[in-house]
Length: 255
Image 1 (tube, helix red, strand yellow):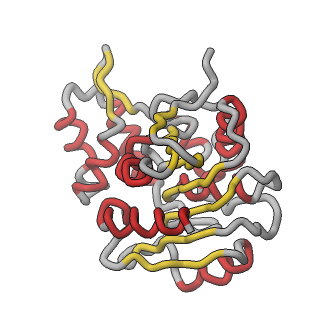
Image 2 (cartoon, helix red, strand yellow):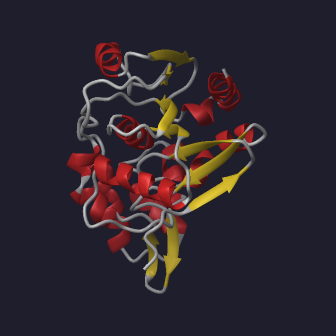
Image 3 (cartoon, helix red, strand yellow):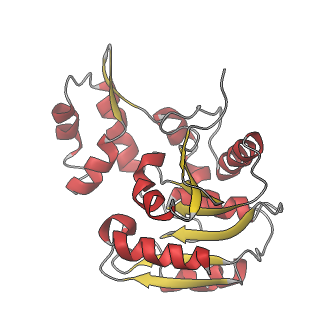
């Protein structure tokens, strides 16, 4: 069995690893990758339990970070810049807080090093209904999701991971494993109390994922960090403001 994470790599130069959010896959961040590839060798990873990467027996931030380290080892990458969005940002923080110097610079997109409320419980339930419903088309799957996921953009994001099979449609991600490990995935990153890695937090101006209440914890655990507001952007800030986000990240990594 191949236990290596799925990765799509491109460009030349210093290594940069991109980590996507919950229910996503590495291709979600290809826009950022394309912007960085003229200057860096960029790797878009599918996290464990997502995309085409292996499924784990137990999902947690630490297990996901360990899988990224194992992938780095197998690809002879001693140190890398790491960019993570949402869950990927938590995994990136866990990697930097793990006590091993593998992260040169860190970019965390719209997530804080805190425990979040169980806001995805209803989404997990409706995703299970889609998988159990024997849907014969993507339209049928989407119709089951409308009441719980009214935002068409969020539905489109989720449906990117819907794939056809002999018995109908199923999710490419490990839905049962993510549901079982959800408490661990919404936890604050563990590890050393402070991380001295230079870190840029990007905060969507219309998102509620990084609030004023989170600022003290960001400063406490990442004292070498700064927070930059991305105006007119929600949680998917790299989709809402792609040119601005790519420009800010590129300038930060090249500084």
